[in-house]
Length: 192
Image (cartoon, rainbow, N blue to C red):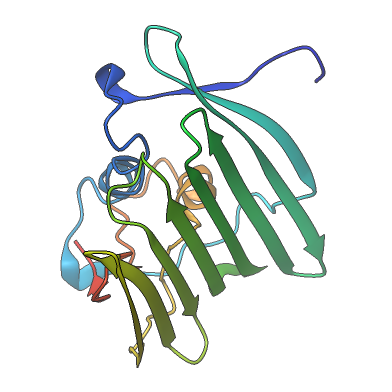
């Protein structure tokens, strides 16, 4: 819809590390009533389609922090979704997620880049949801560190899929718990 400007606001107008709260907040929302022993795949109720969304990230006071795009392409049961925010201070948040949506949602790959003043710890994380290989490029005291390791990535891993999964959870479901690979310099699987 042209002319309309969708907005996403920060919580409480917090501007420090603008998106550093986004992943934990959405994860918390998804896992609100979770039990680590009950992780499960989320069934597809609403198939994802082709999307091009024009986004603006604002504080609650209306100050513009970033502009971005959400672009989704679909090929058969496979969806490629890219969410990009370009911040006013030059920072970048860029996440490309590839997932399947055949009966249940399944992460195939996720690539996350966070850099610039809004992200005190620049990081680039690549996850292969099939093989379990995770590569993390981070900077510590101005020195680049690269870590590649193979994790046992569960089929319910939700990196890059949080909003899609939230749309598909049945209202009558007593709880929904999924796994995430932490986007940190030493990745691990969390399931809370």
